[in-house]
Image (cartoon, rainbow, N blue to C red; front, side, top):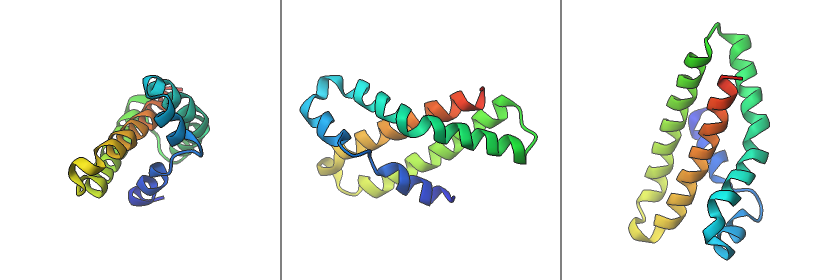
Amino acid sequence: MTIAEDAQEVRRLPPGLWERLRQDPIRSPEHIALAAARSFGPQAARWAGDRRARFRVTPQELAIMAKKRHATMARFEGAATGVGGVVTMVPDMAALAWIQSRLVFYIAASYG
C-alpha cells in the first residue's frame, strides 16, 4: 500500500466517532484512543510481522520506519485539509490526532 493510499485510509474515521467527538468534546482523547485501539492494534501487528518477515530489522529500525511513514502521511493530510484555512482547522486537528494515534500503535508493534 502506498503512503497516499495509507493516508486516504486513515482519513476515514470509524463510524460514529465524529458524532461522539462532537457530543462529548471533553472526552475526545478517550474516544480517539479507544477507536484507534480497535482499528489500528491488529493492523499494526500485521504490519510489524510483515516487515520482520521481509527485512532483517531491529525493533528500533522498525519504529523509525513507522515514524517516517506517519510523518509523510501527516504531511499529505495537512496539505489536503490545510488549503481551507480556519474553516478546516477542526477536521485537520482531528485527522492529525488520528494519525498520531495510529503511529503509537505502529511503534508499539515495532517493539512487540
